[in-house]
Every structure is written in structure tokens, then in C-alpha cells.
Length: 275
Ligand SMILES: [Zn+2]
Image 1 (cartoon, rainbow, N blue to C red):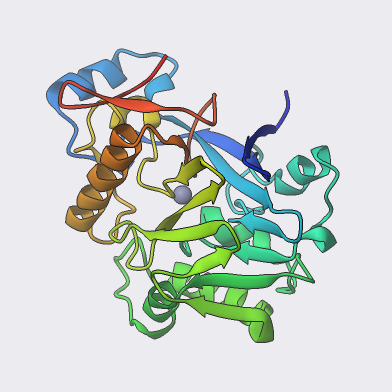
Image 2 (image 1 turned 180 degrees about the vertical axis):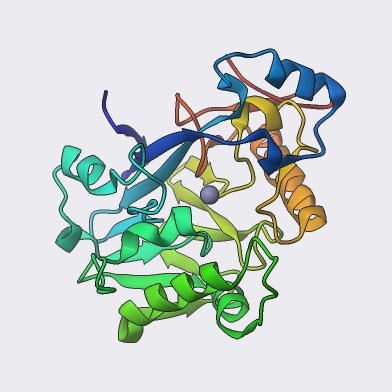
């Protein structure tokens, strides 16, 4: 099965790259209603907590921007296929001119470096929000934190691999021409999505506001253990989903299942995919 899905926004090509897939353990989810828990437990295939790990490439004719770099070899045999996905659309790592990291979690940066710590995308400038950089490089972590020292060490390794090609962005910056940042703090302090706008067409990448789409669209109060600040993450989740629904924006995200590009609408206390 293909690892890529393509769309065009005006003259800009957007292609999602499925790095891998996995079922999240129930313990990774918080704020589940009793109804949600019963539904998950009664579902033998655990389809409700199934997720994908997606990167994407945005091509504006001048630059090939890679958004996130997949899991690398950190998440086992069902993940780490970013380069295969890129190859499907005729691109090698050397063709990537820019990388934007939505945030510095292992499933978004693991594929940026080789086992020896060197940069896989040798010609790419690495861009991320200043705030995300500061969080992972200056905070001291206690040993029981999930967003902890191991992840901080990995972040520092990735950042140093791209050393002189690192570019720290402000909240209202353009990543490349036609692609502008939408800060969505909470999942991590400098977590961000972005919009692609060209002519009268637009697309919204919502970053990691949702990890298990089948559950969290319907009930956005569900969050994961991986949120650094669950309250702000919930605010950002609702803000992003509201914007996508009210502006009828084509949207995608880091953990979207198939189809990768959807429209959503308000439905009950949550949201639903527009069919
Ligand atoms: Zn993620």
C-alpha cells in the first residue's frame, strides 16, 4: 500500500508520508469517559486506539520542505519508513532543502539522524519555534517525567547534527513562502501547526493536537500522557478544530489515519469528518 497521499493548494504540492503505524496502549489516554473505555475494551482489534505516524513534504517550486522526520528506528518494526515514502515521490534525502519540526518528540525527529548521530538530510535547514528549542535545551527534567531527560537528550543530538543550519522561528513567521506557522502550545510548549495558502486555496496542518483520531474528534477532551500541559493542549485542540470547522479548511495532522486530507464539522459536543 502506498505510503503517500497528495493534494495541491494553488501551485503548491503537499504530500503526506506515512512513516508507520501502531496501536496506542489504553494507559496512554486520559480523560476517557466510561463510555469511551467500554467501547475501547469491547473492540477486539483495538481499532479505536490505532494511529499513524505521518510526515509531509511541501513543494513550492523552489524548496522541498519536509515537515517532521518520522520515528527512525525508535518505534519498532512497524515504523521508520520515511525514506521509502519519500522515494515513492522521487525524492531522496539530499533533495530536502528545509525541515520544519512541529515539535521535538521522538516520533517527529527520530528519523532526522543516523545511528552515528549525523544528519540524514545533509542539505536541509532545520527550523522550529524558538520556544520549543528553549524548552528541550534548557529545562532540567525529573526522572519520572515522560517528556523527560531521554527525550531532551535526543532533541539536543538532533539539534547539534544540524548545528549551523538551525533556524529558530518566531510564532508569526513563514516557514517557507506560502507556509505560515500556527502556534498550538500545550502538547509541548513550542508545538505548532501551519497553514499552506496559495491563490484562494488553503490547507491547515494541525500538528499533534490529536493522536487517536477515531476517539479525539468525537470527544476532544480526551488527551494523552504525552501532553506537557494538558490544559493548554486541550485549548489548542479546540482552537484548531474550531478553526478547521468554521473556515471549512482542508486539514491533515501528524497522526491522521486514511484519508489523510479531510474536512471536519462540529458534531454534538465534538467534531466529525465531513463525508
Ligand atoms: Zn506525535
